[in-house]
Image 1 (cartoon, one colour):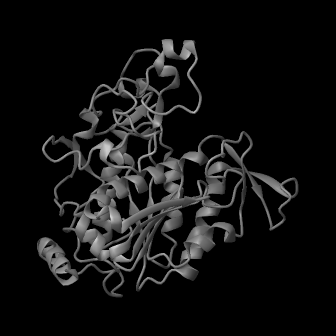
Image 2 (cartoon, rainbow, N blue to C red; image 1 turned 90 degrees about the vertical axis):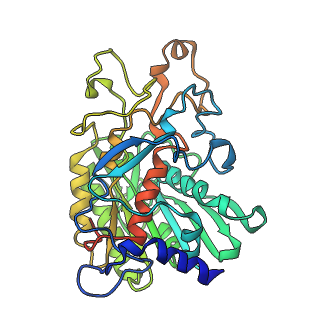
Length: 390
């Protein structure tokens, strides 16, 4: 069965079987079975309505979706947000194939590291894969900050590790992490990075938690007393410092001959409908049912933070694939959970009178937009461009 599955993957990839090099003549990237067509930028394109092919799964049939993301179960009246397919401009790539991906993950460990948006992408991937595995051959457990999905017949694990700032912080509790005064440790990263050791595929994200304030408090040194040696830095520069630490860790610990690392760019919010030309006062993502059609649209995502990400990752001496979800997600004002989710606190009568006041315009319904993020990750993993870090 293993040989047949691999042959099927190669056959499906036949039109794309050009050399998938690292850009420096060092040979093929691990997991690559081909390469994207020349000039193909999968982050640029358009959303195409495709009711025949989307969604890939139904909300009710995936047991891993947290109640904060189950929009249909919480009364969302429309389903159109599930029916959009991302079409990269000027190129096409193989469709996501769960069995093929599981075969490529045989004997491997895949780890997502980041915040709740990265966890949403992680859960999306489990939903995309789990139907290809018998119930008796899979398991799922969460212990503290680490969630582990096991595909037993493949001897593979797909895991998520909660580290919203990547660096150690006072928001590291996977359940209770809402704090008013956020503090991070600039170095070392040992508390978190010890969980990253041995992963064959690492998928990082970190953006949202850096944008709450203009400045971030940094604890310097290894002293656990948070009252000592704390300095304030501009959030973007603190973010730069932490990303450098991640890159340096990858350079010391990741073997580019048998492992891959990826960084998922910023997931946008849609908290102000005036940004897309809606004159209604106080408007946001609530009751939005279609994507934004203006190809030039850009919302509130920080270009400075994106620039920092690009500059730091470019310094890496090991390949880091960038999964650019930002622009395509900017268009999807309709994909957020809005009010159709489990609420952390019961809305007040005043809030219920104006649902916009408590709409979640940050997180995404599943099935939905994060499924497309995983499609991009699939392409980057198995069909990287010749310049893998773009």
